[in-house]
Image 1 (cartoon, rainbow, N blue to C red):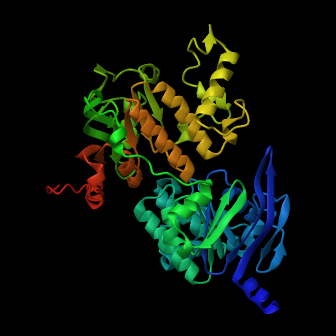
Image 2 (image 1 turned 30 degrees about the horizontal axis):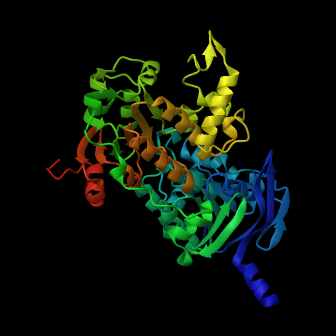
Image 3 (image 1 turned 90 degrees about the horizontal axis):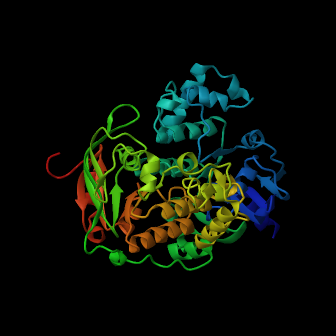
Length: 517
């Protein structure tokens, strides 16, 4: 028995036992126990708010557990800060990078070196080590490049190099593919495989089931702060994992036949649209499209090809340089955002924190954010608190927003519930058109499923929907038609997504149209 125990201990580089963490009114982690084994990728699955990130922040020393203990290499440890974690060989790659944009790669790496011997390295010595480590793991990056000049995939490499520079042998990765292209995701997975082959370990926090099957050796699922199950990857299936994550069977989303597509009444018509980007270039360059009532037009494309500028121009947030936008037969360029809202256009932005919500305002304040001046909610500049409270309670119930009160700060909600607040508000506004940009970005399986059903319900009510997403699977499953955008133009429309060739769509996304262009 002792031999078996010692063998298990030799495999376990980290053991969390009975970890419990309380926040005001919430048990984030409830007696959670798990181990991380040498040379493995442990996938930590769960919905937003399940306790995944909290648990890993405890392991990294950002939070202190209220109960339970941590063992590293079989020895009980107290991890009171990230410095303690890094001294134990534990590094964490956060979903939102912790880099200083105006500093170079090598400066950022040295800033993260703490007080150890690496911190006393010269810039030249550190640059040499960064280059060697980058070459060894396929993480090449120019040590002298400014962070603000690097694309997001390169910035993530810098975060990983920071951890490796400190000697990390256990890497915690929190939703590491949330901002990556498929190509960058593949490179990240190649690094993880090389890293773990050397006997190092990775904890991979995600809610994307397809990634689990590609990269994980073992899977632990959290639900409502507790361990809902653990199993090897080879014993897992999407259906089993989905049930463990959400506590119920996930129903298939219905087909596209529910749309109101006949007769085809055009709600939105965009012709010859040209819009400048933030650097003065043509982000949208002679674009044409139309959307009918009861139709979802999906815009597929690699991020940065003019999708967001198109959405902003339609919603009155970006100036139209040339061309026209017709909403229900009326030209709208030149109208401001408030007039577009009044015309019945809802807008779900790609970044709910930066553009969709005022985080320090309450749930009810965010729900009426675009309509607070309406006679329904105010009288001569004085807010009608009773009406606002009643409206908010109805919306919270209708959209199943998990909050203890309409007065709770929206900052304190989970990501999925924050998105529900945005969607509830914009659905109420969108009498004719909804513009949805990356509506499920960063959401877990259950929350993303909920958003999809809301979009399909809106379509069944006859609303026109412009859906912008870099998730091709999302575009294919929801859209009645697909337009592929490349360098500000729609290169091609696919009228039958159910039978569309995915490889062909992928080629068009790269600018290959099959006619020599």
